[in-house]
Image (cartoon, rainbow, N blue to C red; front, side, top):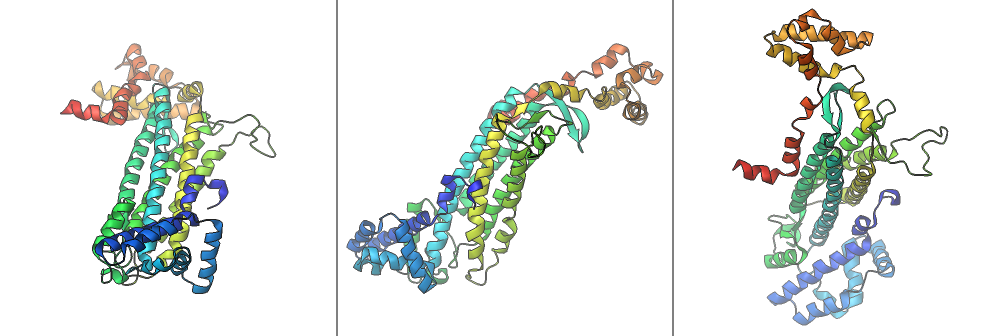
Amino acid sequence: MIPRYSRPDMAAIWEAANRFRIWFEIEAHACDAQAALGVIPKEAAAEIWAKGTKPYTPERIARIDEIEAETKHDVIAFTTELAEQIGEAARFVHQGMTSSDVLDTCFSVQLTQAADILIADVDKVLTALKKRAFEFKDTPCIGRSHGIHAEPTTFGLKLAGHYAEFQRAHARLIAARAEIATCAISGAVGTFANIDPSVEVYVAEQLGLEPEPVSTQVIPRDRHAMFFATLAVVAASVERLATEIRHLQRTEVREAEEFFSTGQKGSSAMPHKRNPVLTENLTGLARTVRAAVVPALENVALWHERDISHSSVERMIAPDSTVTLDFALNRLAGVVEKLLVYPEQMLANLNKLGGLVFSGRVLLALTQADVSREDAYRIVQTNAMKVWTEGADFRTLLNADPKVTSIMSKAQLDEVFEVSYHTKNVDTIFARVFEPQAIRRAAQ
């Protein structure tokens, strides 16, 4: 994590104060459950809560770090400092538990906290995309395949496609949150030999988690691998939209561009520059999030019931991935909200090739007039290539081709060149994206 790409709420999840607070709550809730079973005195459990809830100030954190420098064990350093706060009752803390019970359960809490923020972030992106999609629902522009002009579409339809993708991102994050939200309070090698399974159930309930069916002392890392893979897929969706905007902002295209504020500078050497710096930044941030996937997958194969080869990896990829994606999603929402769109340039680009983008419609019209597809393709392509090489007007060429005029009148040919033909189903697509429930009800 670096401050440049960090937002306070997400960064705070990974700070020591939050981590130690969660550790304390895990231990204290476990004490409550142990007290209910008669394993430890109820008075001790009450005293642990009463004396242990002091905020984890920089001084307390420094004391834990000081102890860890000697013990070389973070959980022991934590419980030792906690004992200094609580006194005699501290001997009942961590009864029957192992370090992974605290570490893994805390990690689950932190990841669910992070997931909640990311889900809210995607909601912001969805809100921005929906507003701009409807704003430009009927704004014609050229669709491209392989980067080459293909057939007409609308800019709103482009944005609706990204909206649908982020709807899937929203659902994936909810599923990833559910998968990671498990609790392990099962003791050494996960057998519950020294702690009753009901303690795990109680702690899980208090923390909003589910008991891990088989923890083997650690929560299985396939859950974490899926979580980080989900973040990577969401980041890929961020990059796809960012890349589209970058292409549209190119000088030769200039159909849309990032907002350029008063006083903003694009280049130290060329004062005219308006560069797509935000979306380029989003492309780079997406790469960083995706980089966590392979280490997360490699963490799945731990030795026997546990080892700690995963620990150092997670201490880095969890903060970095969640903080980076949080920043990226919020930046993307802002880019979409303020995106400058140029409908006139979209129309100019659509018409740039003299009607060549209607070649597919001409092909269909000829085949519907009893011309074989092979012959129709040959007629259309012959004229189309002249547009590429000679800069001619496609409709003019077709109107001068007896192979065409013998089959189609000028009025019929003019109809083929109507943009509205290509956009007639935009409302239907929008209903599928923005009103799927209504469509399902109508179909029933």
